[in-house]
Amino acid sequence: MISKTIDAASWVCFSRNAFRYPILQRVSAGLVSGVLLWVVSLSAQAAQFPEKPVRIVVPFPAGAAADTAMRVVARKLSDQWRQPVVVDNRPGAHGFQSVTASPADGYTLLLGAGSGMVTAPLLSSKLAYNPSRDFVPVGRVVINIPILTTHPSLNVRTVQELVELARKNPGQLNYSTSGNGSPGHLSMEMFQAATGTRMVQIPYKGGGPAVNELAGGHVQLGMNAVPSVAPHIKGGKLVPIAVASAKRSRAFPNVPTMAEAGVKGFEYDIWYALFAPTGTPADLVNRISKALAAALGDPEIASQLLAQGAEPAPTTPQELARFIQEDTARWAKLVKERNLKLD
Image 1 (tube, rainbow, N blue to C red):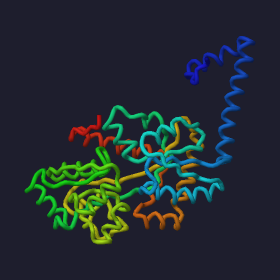
Image 2 (image 1 turned 120 degrees about the vertical axis):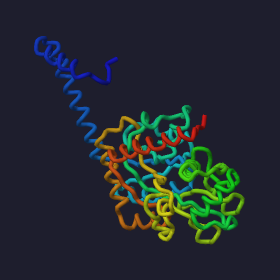
Image 3 (image 1 turned 30 degrees about the horizontal axis):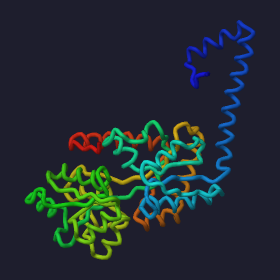
Image 4 (image 1 turned 180 degrees about the vertical axis):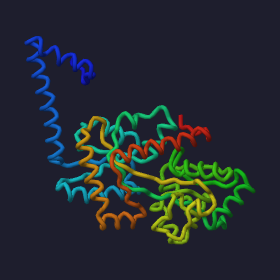
């Protein structure tokens, strides 16, 4: 079996010997021709992409914030490519595995989130996939700004009031999450570390139940993506305290950031990005990334996403790779300090 890679020194040695021995001249010529044909073939594939429907696997249930945002973008990509772009909901590890098992030809992509691509590997050594090994970054899609809300019965309307109450009653306040290691859980761990408070996590099976229980007054507070809680805030069932991002949410511009509310250095965004299976040609990855950026730059698409509470946040593959490195370093520090794990 011929190795897929040839180191530079071996290639130089082989090339020199090819001029000395006729048989090697024929082998060398054939090998070079084969490599050139392979490169030309890949370039042709990228230039013609797509020639058939593209599938985007979303490892979240239908109707989730990630799903609704991706469907808006998928429709625009379909218009650009003149091919169907199908959103395939496969919640959990099965979604990731279905992409890793697919050909690296650009026709199967993954909508990954920070929870699955960054924090899950830090919290568990038993994942059925390895983000850095199995996927290559294509481009970020949207950012959902997390917002800290309380139930009106808690009678708390500012971060300062919440911190004072939590410090006076350590371990007495509770917050809902969609499970251990979820964005709601980790952001609240960050909040407690930054404010010197201690609260109790009440994990639920999914974001929907976590938000509904909070809105129903069964738990007292929670950190959730804006799209998940916006209807409850507008309906008076939840009180917005602060947003976790570095800038205010366009959906709730009057709600301060954590930094503005006195929690310095607190910054957290829930992000979603497209990934391709490892081995996908770089020129094809770049082609898909540019199409994604063009879709997100369309004013109508941006307006639809903002109406959901999601903010377009396109990047190049290289920018996304750097962003993931920085995000991983930040969360690794918190996971270690708080001794967080799922195993």
